[in-house]
Length: 370
Image 1: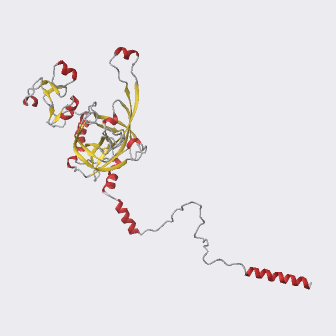
Image 2 (image 1 turned 60 degrees about the vertical axis):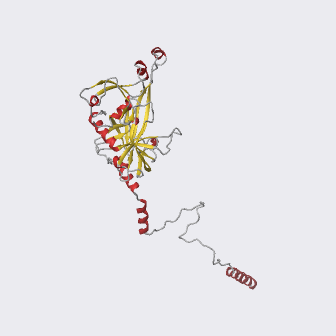
Image 3 (image 1 turned 180 degrees about the horizontal axis):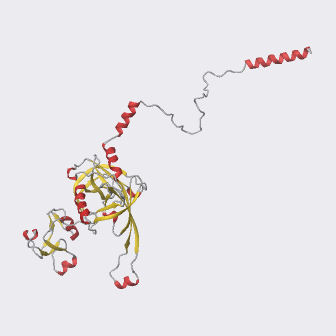
């Protein structure tokens, strides 16, 4: 028994000795506290939230605000997307026999996308005529809030490339304010707002910014079409497909023009820094005519009737030119007779502008009030 107690006592002493020799934690070794969490294993961790100085935060936010951001906030609720579906008939050839057997004609459905903006509280919308096109069957308007409405075409003018729509609703809508395009300065801010390419189904407009590059530009982008653009605003704010019909806005949020087309110079179909907008003063003048009668007419009597000179007409009557207007008749009480114009005369210019076609002449005559 004495030996057994001796062995137990020795074992107890050894255990106590080993416990006292257990290595202590190194003073520079990092330990995980309750406030820290172990690594999640990601390469980069999310940054911890920081408390900023309140006055500095307000200063930063204030510096982000500018005339451009304020102008966008003013005009954006009134900018809409325009979606048009319709039909077009195939072109017939000049041979009735061929058409009867092989080309009886067919109807093809088309879809156009563009932009527009609300100009009155009761939901009148302005856009480009080429967005609406001919034979439109269904017109949809999508607001920046995403709400969608049917719309009706009230009037269109192919020469000026303007169309007036009306949202089919009794609601009241946010609408734009027009600025005076005669007061524009080359070099001031120009903001183009619209829905390029019809990309955004929620109706939220996109914004591009540039300057007024030039004023009073005359343009006929497609010689085969009747549209003649006079006194246009040139801007380097990007106007892409789908921006057509959207507003061009100044730094105060006022509409100074309607974005209409770009010039590519044959280099591509994309924007190369030459965009054109119809001036707001021209828009207002034509808009009033569309509201009154649904079409644009001369607000004065020129005092004569004319025919556009074609190659066939020039050959038939041995005319010296294929450009200009052939005067057919003259009203003795009108301004043309007082100016010495007689039947058989050929009018080559209206003002200082040469006449390229009968449609071009109509566009030129409409620039005069009387």
